[in-house]
Image (cartoon, rainbow, N blue to C red; front, side, top):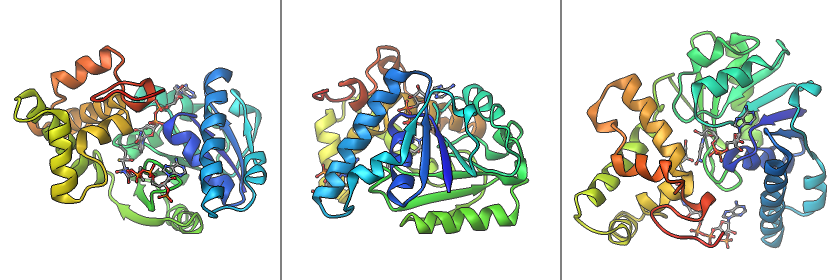
Length: 275
Ligand SMILES: C[C@H](O)CC(=O)SCCNC(=O)CCNC(=O)[C@H](O)C(C)(C)COP(=O)(O)OP(=O)(O)OC[C@H]1O[C@@H](n2cnc3c(N)ncnc32)[C@H](O)[C@@H]1OP(=O)(O)O
Ligand SMILES: NC(=O)c1ccc[n+]([C@@H]2O[C@H](COP(=O)([O-])OP(=O)(O)OC[C@H]3O[C@@H](n4cnc5c(N)ncnc54)[C@H](O)[C@@H]3O)[C@@H](O)[C@H]2O)c1
């Protein structure tokens, strides 16, 4: 099928890659050609890794299935995945531009209400949360979130499509942060507060969580990996929508975001990286 992915950042480029890997034709869109060139570089580097490991056979064929264009409205697709920044006003503006009422429109939001966003989609019955995990080509979970109006056929199709992409879909209700980020953000936030309180340094906190709990990454390293701006936006949604003090975004995190220390994608966050 033809799939349009809107937003070519960390997640959008990975999601486009997954659909192309499994034989779909993909249109990947973002606001500028320079961003799309970076998306293409990231996708091709990832495809090279997958082919070196024998997971895919012909990386060039997969790569050829992806078309990059800033104007996604020039194409009609059967399936859309919205993966722009975690801001309700930007997501609603993008969803409003999709006109095909017969298409399934999925959002990769980490925390925002699916029911609220569905009001901007062409057809709320065919609107759903399809929450991929970073990096999408490696992580096996898709959290599937139905909104108030999402119909049974859309849920079934998205569960089936998720399985056909080699993923394990799990259905959850439309609640802020769903399950994944309700639990994960509490962990990351507590790690940042522990850093602020000087209980240990970043490396100490991460080593404790990696070696003590067998997590592949420590929570601060993971925040850098997700993007500290994304973590900050998700905490804001959780804090505003649930009202629990335990989700109040830490000042350290806010200041890092203002300073552009977004983590791996900008070369610095809780740690420094080679860009
Ligand atoms: C916030 C949101 O709403 C929700 C989220 O997404 S929360 C974040 C969820 N993600 C996580 O928690 C990820 C936690 N981290 C991990 O699982 C691992 O560190 C990781 C898989 C990212 C990387 O693994 P790690 O062993 O540290 O490094 P690395 O050796 O580079 O990678 C492991 C394998 O994955 C491959 N890989 C990693 N990223 C890849 C990519 N983008 N494309 C292709 N291959 C990739 C590597 O080639 C490597 O393969 P190998 O083991 O066969 O050599
Ligand atoms: N980073 C993660 O680990 C992760 C994991 C799961 C879900 N998510 C969610 O996925 C979405 C994208 O996150 P990300 O980490 O890829 O962010 P990102 O900042 O890497 O990429 C977002 C992209 O959206 C683009 N964009 C902004 N406005 C746009 C518009 N009007 N039209 C088209 N593109 C536009 C930006 O240029 C940017 O390239 C968010 O909703 C986030 O919460 C993130």
